[in-house]
Image (cartoon, rainbow, N blue to C red; front, side, top):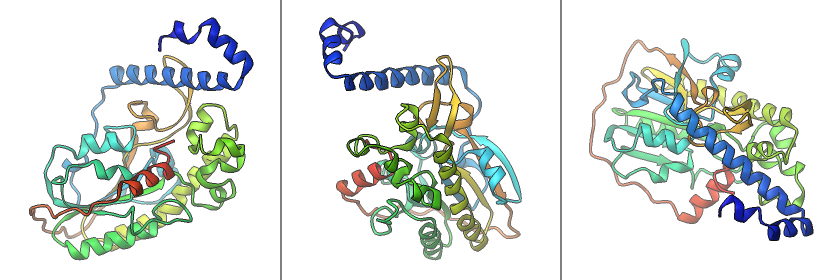
Length: 319
């Protein structure tokens, strides 16, 4: 619908009768402005992006939505820590640029991310998808200790393959004490009952001004990194070979975008702002490297579409 049809006398009368309609239009305008900003970033930010599969490692540990600055500040992971630029600002964009169209038959992918089902069946030698049998109903996510357990099991089964382990944290749901205190997804206790089903995403709620306690939500997000970090350390300590710890993308916590100066949150797709695509690159060296061989892919276990949709909603990819 064009702007002029939306801003007709008839619609003005509707808003006067039901002022709640104005909130929906405000949300639409902010979303449109953010999309315009995203196009500008894609035109202007053409710095070289990392090709994670072309880098030198035996084990690649991927944190979901982890900022480089917070990783460097809050963890002691890695013999050396630097940053690289991700090819995407959200998970599927990262997967498309990093995995799709390639035959990575020397690699096993252990993943807690719900976008994995979109990958072509012949991408990896094997995919261990944790979203069905290893889902934690209480926290509405896959817990980090489960990723460690299943990655080690995958290595035992495929000792001659590279391993990618994709944790869901520090992406929400928030599983630490602060996050649990403020409710599932970080905002339920701050919204009216009739709003919770509409806006289960804490970063969207902050962006649209429907939740104003930014400090608590950011604290819960930081806490998720503190929760997952010890499990990452355990994993890289127990996996033989050279490990790299990185992230699929970062997360905005109120930085302003341009050319329209919006305070943005979360990880909107296509918004290639530096804080959103700068990710950690922590290297854990090893005295011995393992021999890796490529073999034809194994058949991938299918996940019910209803399960996928539920996981996407729980993790904030669906409203």
